[in-house]
Amino acid sequence: MLHGDRILVTGVATPDSIAFATARAVLDQGGRLVLGAFPRDLDAARDLAATLDPDIEVLGLDLCDREQVDAAIARIGAAHGELDGLVHAVAFSPRGALGGDLTDTDPADIELAFRTSAWTLSATARMLRELAPATGGSLVGLDFDANEQAWQVYNWMGVCKAALRSATKYLARDFGAERIRVNLVAAGPIETRAGKGIPGFEHLLEVWDSTSPLPWDTRDAAPVADAVCFLLSDLARAITGEVLHVDAGYHAMAAPLTPEQRAARDRGRQDGAKVSRPA
Ligand SMILES: NC(=O)c1ccc[n+]([C@@H]2O[C@H](COP(=O)([O-])OP(=O)(O)OC[C@H]3O[C@@H](n4cnc5c(N)ncnc54)[C@H](O)[C@@H]3O)[C@@H](O)[C@H]2O)c1
Image (cartoon, rainbow, N blue to C red):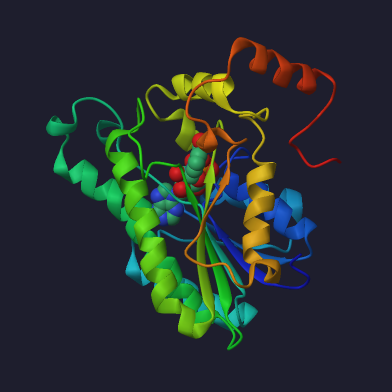
């Protein structure tokens, strides 16, 4: 799908990172990679990148820091020329903003969660505007579906994700003239460092298992990564301002499956029906 496209994937930290699965998928689809990692995660990201291809450049990049963003624009422009796509797979919230009493959360925690998890989408949009060819580009971010409902957990981070979704639409409006598309993939729960940092994350895993009509593997980010590649690719050339759910259908259900429906789904799983891409 990506035949020669130059893609920057941000947010690589561990082998479980959605960004790392996405990096692998970009290569599988014929794309060329540059990776971005938060400075604290840079060494780990370099080790991971080397397992894919020793020539992949990994930039230290705190997306909250304008100087680092400007330096990354200059470095990518000088070393790689243009950028066809950019993946924003970045979020952070201090623990206080992820749980507890919403009225008693330290505003500084909320501000940091917002700046990292929502505002940085605009920083990546600016990067792509600087680096995309005249034919345009594609920016893809990662959502956890928090726009229309309150989760049992997630608190102010849910509010930040709602803001991310809103920002996606405003950026899609402003970047359309430059043929830059802006979309999100709303992923089901994946056992990453960020995911496991959510107090009550195990509860989310349980509600997914009781509700999603397709099986959902919380340790497999490949279905999410493949959808990101689709949105990066020319196949999605008329899609912008969109949220594509890759969640085994959870978002479309009003309530948990009946025990019979669940058993039928799980029989399908035992029979070998897979959500994962065949090897
Ligand atoms: N894991 C899930 O269940 C799940 C579900 C839906 C959406 N998402 C979203 O997927 C994205 C990736 O998260 P993940 O689950 O792969 O976890 P992860 O912990 O592997 O990735 C989060 C990344 O954000 C980076 N980061 C934090 N602050 C940063 C900053 N200031 N500048 C640059 N990078 C910064 C971290 O270094 C890390 O690489 C996030 O937006 C997350 O909200 C995750």
